[in-house]
Image (cartoon, rainbow, N blue to C red; front, side, top):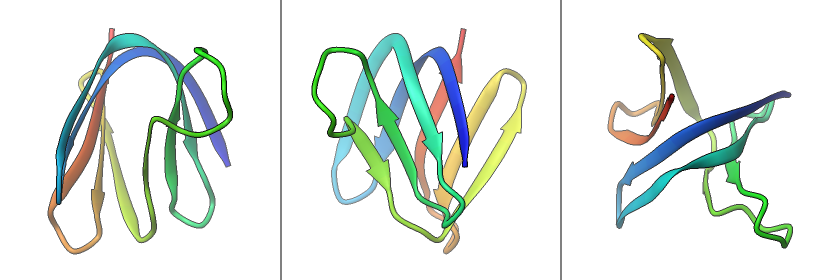
Amino acid sequence: MRLVVARCEVLYTGRLTAVLPEAVRLLVFKSDGSVLVHDDSGGFKPLNWMTPPTVVEEGDGRIVVRKRAGNRKTGSRSA
């Protein structure tokens, strides 16, 4: 499991499209390939998540998570 705390925005495209504006977020990358996005507004449920299998790509101050099938699903950019 990998935990990342970052000021970032989250862009999600898939069955729905969602944008989480820039804020401090907890990103949880689980060993099974799940990715969860939490904030500190209270509660235990993630604001957004992806189920496995996922591919995580990092570079240029950006983390992109997509389904292994090739469609880009979630991206977050740290400031």
